[in-house]
Image 1: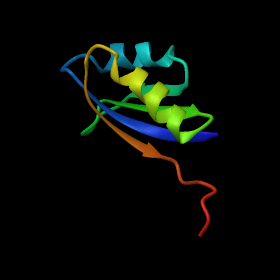
Image 2: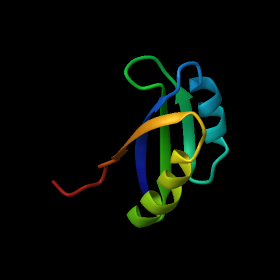
Image 3: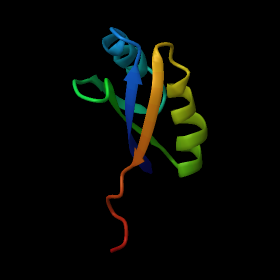
Length: 80
């Protein structure tokens, strides 16, 4: 299992709506709207990095109102 945090910028006033839409997508573990330089933070997961990128992240980027994303794979369990 591979997981990542997606930091998402949205159109003005769309963060809450985008977070709610993301929460229903396959591979999205959670989605919260926040304050700061990003508007929504989502935790996503898939069986492989390829699936995470090609399916889950690509699906998230198709949600109307999203202007920019940054995907940060979680490094827990990585060798030192």
